Length: 48
Image (cartoon, rainbow, N blue to C red; front, side, top):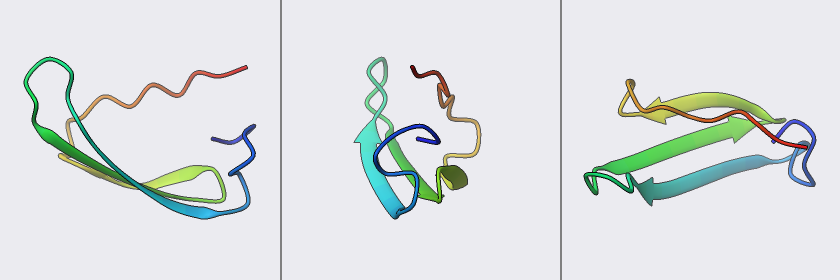
């Protein structure tokens, strides 16, 4: 998100784990993750 078109925005993402379908919630502000639920969810921070 740091190098994306959303880097200057506050965003909220709701999704589910591809393996177990557990709900995942992520909030980011200015490209920085500020909240991830559940806390042990793995967030890949890769990019171009």
